[in-house]
Image 1 (cartoon, rainbow, N blue to C red):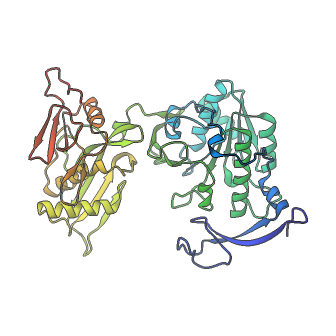
Image 2 (cartoon, rainbow, N blue to C red; image 1 turned 90 degrees about the horizontal axis):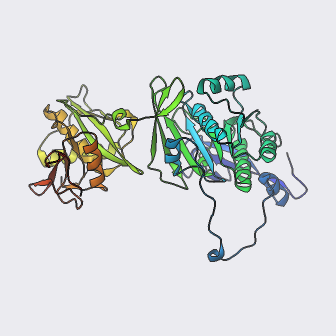
Image 3 (cartoon, helix red, strand yellow; image 1 turned 90 degrees about the vertical axis):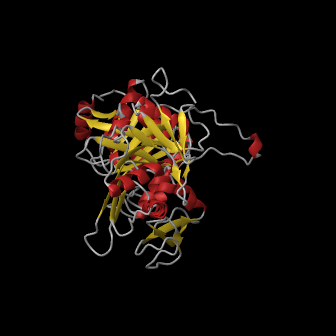
Length: 465
């Protein structure tokens, strides 16, 4: 049993790998989240000496003061050098922040962060890149391909936590990148690298070091078969931001989304294209998401969703067919399945279309996940189009949230969504008639929906709202 001084002792606890909750005794089922066989033994060091050893960083002392007298943060964000990444982070790296980046093997995590390191080094800032998986030669080959051989990028091939800490303290870098956190280990801590005890210990010490010294820390994390960050779920609770890199390895499109961000919105997504020279921001994100004109296509509709700070046109596809087996199939990608079931029920009740006994397949183009209520109208239009075999009107976008009574309610930023649709060349938009910020050219139909004709004005453009 390891001890750190006479006052330290160990206390056995059990940690759930799924939700991060702790239990005093092992159980086959986690009492918090209900996951089976997810509790892992964790030896916690208690006592003053143990607490200091687990911290590993001498913090600057601070006496309790009134909250009203606490000075406001004066530190400004630092740009990563990649505009799309800055968008997801909320404007750039916050000094002392810890960012966890996850994604499938080969998706482009190391490529993206090496490009970030190159951009910062080109500005004269020192970047420490620590790799526990690849040799210096392998990383150099990638850097040559990306044209990222900057003298200010300092590479350290190590899996030892103490070596990483010593290098960070001596070099005083502007950014530290660890690829990956599952390979790092502390020789004074029990457990194998990547285990629950090591992951928790390593992340806690690195986070304390980053916040104490004021440099941003980026941790690359492996993912499981379910697409979750490998290791205990509490690893996500210990960091300031969690970003997921998604996309098909053989495809060119990549999506970087934020699932946690203490310093920005979690609705932002960054869209990249993998090229021979690395990741490049998509110049036409709406085209990548299928937000183009549809000509005579059945079961497809276009909407404009709002992701953080910008609108994106995206295509929604639906297929309604006769069931092969007794139980109708429901396959949904990119949308909440419960939301699709609700819209199917509304469509049956309001129009008499009998979709309940049919196989229904719904997909969102480009791999984007829609959680915007204002995209309901496009889902409804795609379902109705596939069921009737009639295409939706050409060059038309659908905006609005569908209520249980079949009524259409306006979403947020209706005018901005209409302007984005007009910019992409769409001719009209179907929106809720009660939307308060409709352009003057909107024509209300039966008091329920309104048609916004972008080509009705003399200048060929819709008037400003």
